[in-house]
Image 1 (tube, helix red, strand yellow):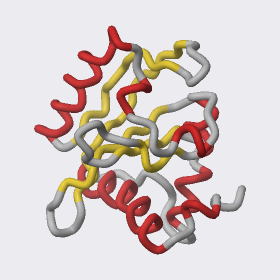
Image 2 (cartoon, helix red, strand yellow):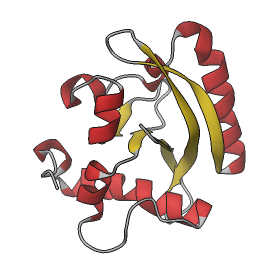
Image 3 (spheres, helix red, strand yellow):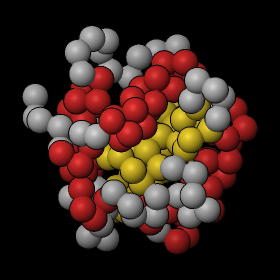
Amino acid sequence: MEALPPQFDTPDLRQRIALIADSHQRLTGRPLVAAGGDLVAALWNAPLAVVAHGTEADPLFFFGNRAALTAFKADLSRFIGMPSRLSAEAPDRAERQALLDRVTAHGYVDDYAGSRVKLDGEHFRIENATVWNLIDKAGVRRGQAAAFAV
């Protein structure tokens, strides 16, 4: 298992990243990663691509695991803080926004398929992706996350 990058190893970010798995479990009834051990490290090393953005007006990615960085041909310094809308080409952004609106309304979807764009401009398709709201224990929406096979 690869060590967690130091930029994620702060109490605030660990809590925010743990919310990805906690929200997934609460909304879908299924664990995102195996229980036990370091949850944040397990998410970083998960075989599924896992990404998450916040609730900014133009939401910014705050997490992308190793598999996601590979899928998007990105490194942490380029991916973290990038507007999540840039993960889709301009013509695909309306479809992406419709998906995010559906997730906001229903909590999660587990049947999403769509086209995405790597940071080098190459396109790739995701199938059977799960996209869910990040909801803290007080019921406040903190963003959205997605997981898909690479």
